[in-house]
Image (cartoon, rainbow over all chains, first blue to last red; front, side, top):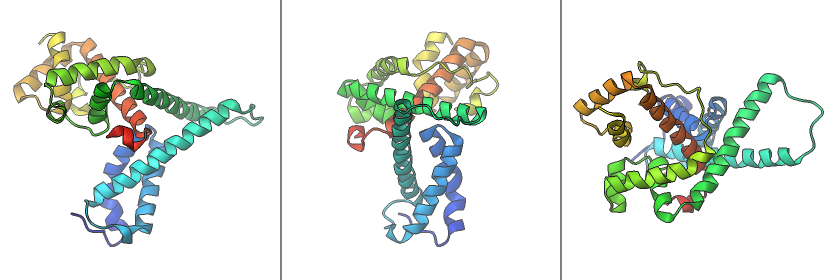
Length: 185
Length: 63
């Protein structure tokens, strides 16, 4: 059970790092993630009196963050579509801005395709993907929940990922070295 | 540990449900196998991509 912290510092200090990590994971862009975390705290402070204390403060904040991220991704996807349909603007952004926008737009386009791919999976394959990558459950937990062996869970995940992999570019810039792999997991 | 052994327990490695001994064997294997390091890296990229995608699906399809 949680209790609404009294002031901004009390709210922000203990949760900002965890929320930022979640936001980066959810939206894939650090500067957008920082905006979203700020917006989360603003919304939380404005609606603090509505916090009923039936979850932890972190769960409550995380819920706000996920909703904001969800909305942002949808807005961005709409903008990307509109931009593709609109005539070219006469004033072009600078090279760095253009690269950042392209990168974010690429990630959104990729996410849209993967999401469509997920919806085309069979119910049993979609279920393990959602439990694994949305609910963040471990293989053993998924096996218990679905009522199949861990081998079956892995096999379903393997099949689902192979189906979705066509939409995921093979990025070479996220290097895992032998010296750092211990710290990356 | 062979590459196939590593692939068989990649999920358990990521889940941190391996025994200390198995984890040590995985690290030894990763230290000398670039292909499996790439497989691990690829798994991280895939995980992030799918997580980003799932956020935008309607909540009812994620139950």
